[in-house]
Image (cartoon, rainbow, N blue to C red):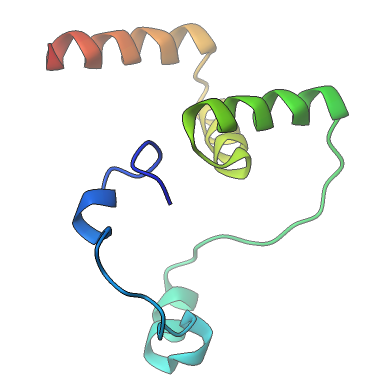
Length: 97
């Protein structure tokens, strides 16, 4: 995890997760996760060039290419175009300035 990819990095940066258990080993958490959906593991074929672009962008931002692909798919199903995303990003940046 890096401070570039996760807005909550600073809050948890100094915590020790050495003895942390996966959700599947904590029945209450596993039940909550099952009830509230989450993510599904899938296998799919992607063009090498497309995958390379997502991996390069993830490396530049310090993120994860799978997260970027998930965000792109989410934007697609919401009907957002690249232009929409750029406009919204500019609005957010201007608002913060």
